Length: 497
Image 1 (cartoon, rainbow, N blue to C red):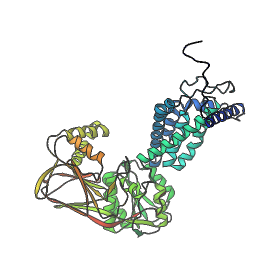
Image 2: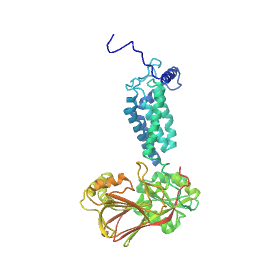
Image 3: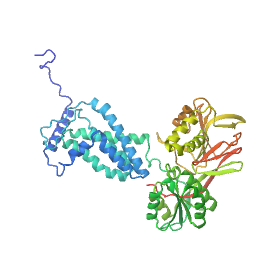
């Protein structure tokens, strides 16, 4: 008898309930192994192998993102993030905490068994966790895409029992862990439903059943062809004018002369121009997202043609605030943001290099040049004393940070300017990063924030750059920024889906 093993010692049987559950699990596994699964033979083993290392889900995410809709891209990103968190949890905690052996393959027909058997422990199922995490993450952002992915995710989970590599309880535990990971990701980065815009003052707007009376100007440089095509299909009576960006202001003026409602599809600058024209002509504005970020449309709750078409055909609209700035003879409006300091400098540098090296490289090069500069981009008088500033940001409405998600405006009619300042000093890059991470309401020696209805800046040097909704201008003396409360009527569906 080996001195290391005492065969006379009583063997621990564990908790009776645990033993019963394990016995039931084994019986369910054997029952599944004995059953005939119609049409599963040629499908489930291949499906199981395709999900190794998450390859199936990464490919699915790429296909969803290729739909080129904001909702699809967000759903794909959320699915991948949920899958990543689930995989990390399974591999770092799950399989190390419960070292359960894999099932014995004797009851499983040879034709079902995988050619390469996994060597990790059995509990919980990583494949089931990844499948449930991806499908749940996608469904939380887009129920339609979630419904399409769910049968595949269920089949992958079931394939692990079918091929004999997991007990049923391994799969159930993995699926529960994966779903939990998706909800954890939602806690860090809220879905569109959680960021739904609040109720805003309703406005009377013309009902345009088939879009007749809408004249929409589309900026062709913003890649709007697909959106315009979808709009024409949804609203055959609408008139659409496609033009180059330099022609947009003139085309918007012409459109306003004959429109019942003025429409626009393009980036922030084009939307800004359309809003200014709509204000002057007293027309309701219809915004079809067509740019890269679409801040104004998304903060309104407008995401695609379906949202806009529904609002137009039902005459649903709201009134929103508009920001206005003046500086000498220079004046303008903004529907998103206005800024002075490092950001306008960065935009100018980026535009200088963009034609030579391309957009993204130009942006990186501009950031490096601006942040490494010794001088402060902006000086202004605060309390009668000059202060060096790296950034002055003014938002049209209060920006809220939700979890780790970027700031969003939940109310575009709150009557407030969201003013944030990054003070001058050493290490500008670190200061700007700290301001971005800390959030809009944080007070510190490096940055501050306040909400006010009006702002006046004196002592700004003539020629200082000012950026508003992606456009850049030079200031000429004192800068005044104020709100025009509920000045603009914008189509927006009463119920956001």
